[in-house]
Structure formats: structure tokens, C-alpha cells
Length: 251
Image 1 (cartoon, rainbow, N blue to C red):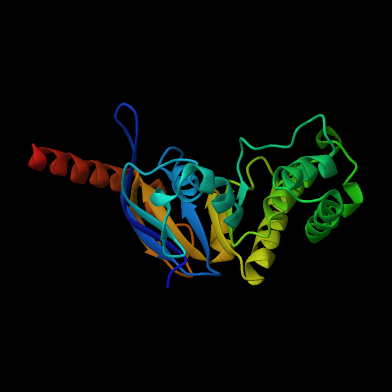
Image 2: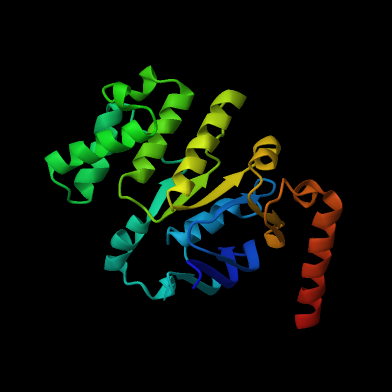
């Protein structure tokens, strides 16, 4: 059975901002896939819907055959431990060292101090940052801080890694380094979903690619590069016309 299932998912932010429309796809355990498209097409929203940071307006989302809309509020924190999450708005706290940033996560999950230290040093070593555990974020390069954020996402031994623009603000060498880390993590059996604007990296990685245009899924290709549809103004017009036609038909 598929690990992730989207069934006709629509997301509307109040009052009438349509972000995603009728999105359906399946992801098998251990897959690596990219979500691509222009800013504002819904890539980040898909990742947030998966981890119940947002709720779908219509449709169903299943994780390991569980309808996540049926989760009780008290169950959501435990459910989110299935995920490692890298987001631009979840940066390191500037007044804590790399180690202490990760310790905060471990303690909030109820781990003992000794177990926390063992796990923190393990994941920092996994991303090549164990030797800088005592450094503050402002003492790290942009690429080094990105590695710490990846380590933080791996702390709870997640089944699924959600990375929202993980190479944003990184130079080409650091971006390629990050992609190699993500690829290594995927090879260890973790399902990886990455939103990205990087045409070059998507082309080089040659993974499964889901292309979003105007909030709709317009292509789903395996072993693919960056789809030209993501940047095609004529594809945008086609999607808008389809949407307008449905609206008129339903009036």
C-alpha cells in the first residue's frame, strides 16, 4: 500500500484564496520526489498539509492508510514525529548553540538528557557537523546552518522527510552538497519530498517530479528533469481557462 495518498485535495485560505485544486497522487515508501513550480503555486502547502500544519478544505490525505483528518488534536504532536521537517520559517534560535537547538527538540519530545546527547551527536555526525555542536548559528556559514537544520529534522528518526526549498540562499556547491545529503538519507529508506525552484538540481538528480501550475498538478513524471510546464505562461493560461470553464458550468 502507498505510504502517502492525496485524493482530490483542495485547499482554500479564507476568504476565497484558492491555493490547491483537486490534487491527487500517491507516494510509495522510500521514494524521492520533487515538487516544482513558481512561487505561490502550492508546493509549501502540500508539505504543510501532509504534517497537519494545515487542514485540507476538500478531499482526503492518508499517511500509512490513516485518514489524517480524523486525528484528534492530542494525537497530532505524536503523528508529526513521523516527519522530519525543514522549512524556511523554522530556523535555529540565535541565542542557543547548534547542540542546544537540537536539545530543545529532544526535551520537548520527552527524551532523557543522556539519550538526547547520544541522539544529537549521532545526527550531527550524520550531516558532518558534530565538530561544530558548540557553535552558535551566527558562527556558522549558511551551508553549515542548513546542515544543522537537516540534523534537527532527523532527530525523531522520521519515516518521511519534508524539505521546503532546502537549498534556498545556498551557493551551487553547498546546494549540491545538501542534495547529496538528502539522497543519502533517502537511500537509508526514508521517503523524501523536496520543494524546489532549482532547475539545475532537479535536472541533475533525475527523480520523480510533480509539477504544479496555478495550484493544479499538471504532470507527474518519474526519472525526470525540471518540467518546462512549470515556467510556461501558456500552461498557466490553459489552467486558468479550465478553472473558469468549470466555474461557469457550475453556476
